[in-house]
Length: 419
Ligand code: NIG
Ligand code: FE
Image (cartoon, rainbow, N blue to C red; front, side, top):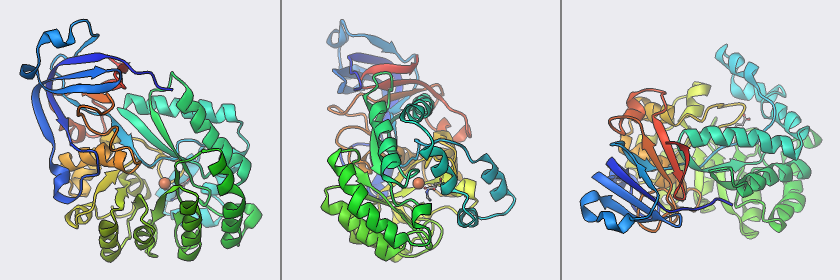
């Protein structure tokens, strides 16, 4: 359980935040409130005041612990709404194979890729997965991430899938971990060797044996699937998502990443919370997502490391969608969690405004996890999840390419990293 505290953050040069308790769509993603010379008061972990210093008297925070920002800008803690941070083993050689021209799916077909991580993760104990996860979470804290989603999907059997989810629960219960964790079941990430060549039979097994157990243990909030040509195609994906929905799970899809098969359209049909990747999604399917209120989650670090054309995030916002951005941290397609690099790629290659990127990495990331009423913005009533930047302006997040300007992280009103 996370602790929660009282804190007065004073001398903030400018406080920047999207506002609201639902995802912001289309043009409204660029509406960022800017409060110069701001103060944030947090009581019992929740924001009690966020506004100009002139709007509050020092007496109202007398006796509270004080964090003097010393003229630094403040933004909401980042919400990384798509990661695969619980895994054992690494696949560094595949990075270099891809750099040498071998495509991601070719490595996957040859039994490399996800399969390699499955072997290593099946061999890892709960304690090992927890220790690996903890290390990755503390690196996330240092980059200002205060809420993270994590997926299973490197077990592909009942025991290991549950162990990955259990590792996330143990980390969520660890008071020394400063990040809230939202667990997602991604059993259909690849077909395991036990069902080689028969993805439909594996989906049958997941529906009959694994999903009910995940439900009974309340081990996941979301269910996700790698809906992709030669992985799990539309019919199997639909069957699985219907089964998950009928058990009360919320839905996510890895959709239209490598080839366009209509995963984005399926996300709209199923009223999923988000569809993710979307590099090859059709505008027609994206418009159906907009009508169905499905959040479009783009993962620029994955496109960058796979050297694929970036998703049309500009077109998505212009079509009225709510865009979230996330890292996709995983041992294969994207071993990176760099928030500053997401900012730079978004500005340089995806035609996004820094304001839109800030919304996509905070409020809309929270909405992609069903948490927009609790975090993702600096407003009275929300969790005191705040980041201070050691930079003259928050816009250095993209401009100082790849550098981490985060100098202090506050979670639920408690300073958890930096000073
Ligand atoms: O989101 N595309 C499928 N799943 C992951 C990659 C997993 C892996 O390569 O280990 C992704 O990119
Ligand atoms: Fe992913």
